Length: 314
Image 1 (cartoon, helix red, strand yellow):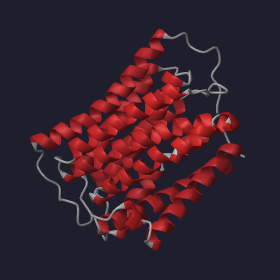
Image 2: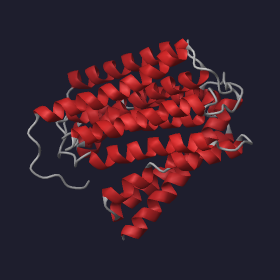
Image 3: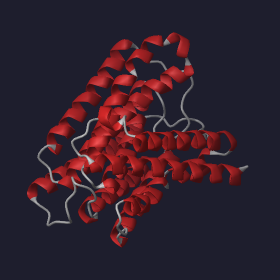
């Protein structure tokens, strides 16, 4: 069953990567197009269906195999997505891009493997949900404000980080709903707001033309946000090895910045590789700082906690 789980997870990653690359291709063709315009494009809808199929395959893999096998396969989506996106835009993937993507994938694998099993029956009251969404919205707005003045690679990263933060907060709400849907009907009306906003921001990130940067950034910001919200609001345990988790987060962040420095743009909103400007450096530092701060705060919080007696696979 382990081999079946690994195969399903890899196939799911391929479907998800294909969908993400197709979405970026459509968004980059018309950088000014909004989410409503993209929803009317058959190819963009096909991409969404491919990503949905990828998610379903990943869930199926988790049902038949251990988390330690399935989750690392899921982060392979970035390694699949880069060559697919490059082929759609008629170019080859540079070796530096593959190396940077490998850093991101290794860091993400480390993060997902270190996240312990969730506690049962999470609960979230109205004040906590409002506070979480307000913090996520403020973070997203700050990223968008920085992105407005940044060069294309950093702009893609910042917009994708904003989307990842909102996706992570939406995932926290879904986690509560999944455990006790009948008791949290009010959350059903709330979940679409961060999810739709995240989708719109991600399409803007894709429209910048630097797919690898955007995809890596959202893949990193989403789980880090979800882990932080789970620990702070739902009482879920943090990674058992804070130092290793911090190192994994920093490795993924360094890979994302490397992608921003080396990736060749594709699409009307892209630029060619350039010398680093002060503003671009500031934006890249902001992205790395957000990830580093999240990982470091998680490590500090975990060091003050009594470790759980037993940590099992999800």
